[in-house]
Image (cartoon, rainbow, N blue to C red; front, side, top):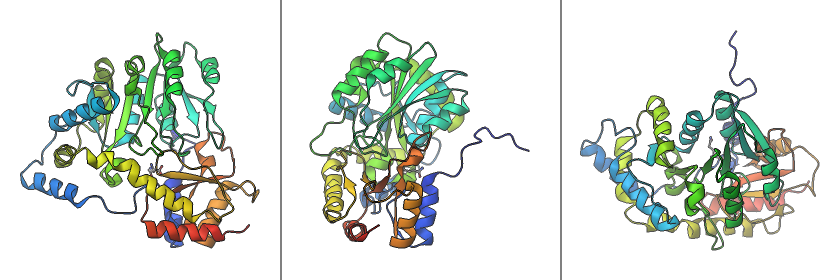
Length: 381
Ligand code: GLN
């Protein structure tokens, strides 16, 4: 009999819904991944570096060329310089960065404050390290943080606060005021911030991404996690990076070196060269805003409740005025009967709060978004 370390964890909802989508040949707007190819040029660069023989272990912290490009990018965009040698590490995706950061900092009985709905990898990482997730529930459609709620939960056991903006699954973003509130809470304390910013380049309506790197006092106590997969349409490469002050990064790397040691070498060289052209990531807001708008235009006639996403490649649709059914049931029924897979938002709450909201990924070809829109507009309950 195996004593499970995660007795309440099953298969992730993303896998469950993708499987169901395949079974029913449904349009898969569930699991978040681009439904169009990445730039051919990036693939060619990987080929180039493989041919040139860059096929052995990369340095544990990542290839220097790539860390340099990233340091410059962050400084240009957010005004904070991370030392490429001591403060940036290349990871096997955002999830590994998050797991390793939590493992490096969270001890037995430490408390970690996090906001629900939350992406599904945070809480298990806390629990596996003997920590205790302390939840603040946010509500559809604004998901606004009441910082006094956070203040009330802070105590001597609080080790970390995890934030995520632009936010998966809600598609909302934190404001500069939010960041200042957070900064006030952690300044002068021993609390670390883990900021999941994997959707940093997917912000809409001329909004500005509020990275912790824009807030000097916050940055001093924070890890910031980024993703190449979300930015360059290659989620299957599982490549990301993490930034943080040198003394925090020392601890991160102690764990990282025994976790993955180092990440894919030719891909790192390719990314470094590719990113010399900043337009490759600066064009993303416009690209995804057009996709969001295409999806929204095509569901104009639908009976779902819509608040346009302000970031990420996710759009929530509320159906509370239309049905009392559980969101998990509705998501399954939409897949089986209408051929559209989505993600029920209750799975992102510790208590499975059902606000009758579904998450749809619009990182898809326009034709597919139009088809999905037509179908969703035809749904009558
Ligand atoms: N980040 C993706 C999403 O939110 C899923 C990744 C995964 O399947 N674990 O849909």
